[in-house]
Length: 125
Image 1 (cartoon, helix red, strand yellow):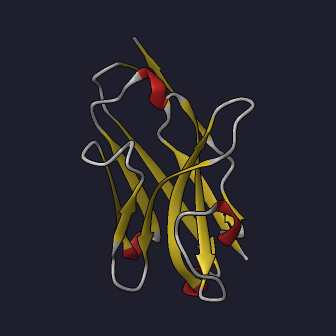
Image 2 (cartoon, rainbow, N blue to C red):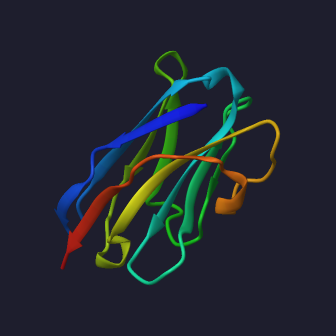
């Protein structure tokens, strides 16, 4: 099992920045990728960004390209989501996710068996 704990959410004005963190513990040697998703009330959980643990490749949703950046600290088993130029439409609960080598892909929530508890990000206009 892998446990994920997010932090760093909050309230920010449009145009501002936030950095989310996701610390992994447990059987982290099994992790092959980590990602960030977001969800608003009544909607599906949407892909935001992902990172391959083996080679560091990164993937982004079109809506956040050029504004968000995913990175990692291998020694701390932590992944970060730097969010710049935030917009009101970025308001959501942000979830960290992880998967092992038994599944593949980056963009769909179904491939990630491990999830954090979520952290609220609110962008005011």
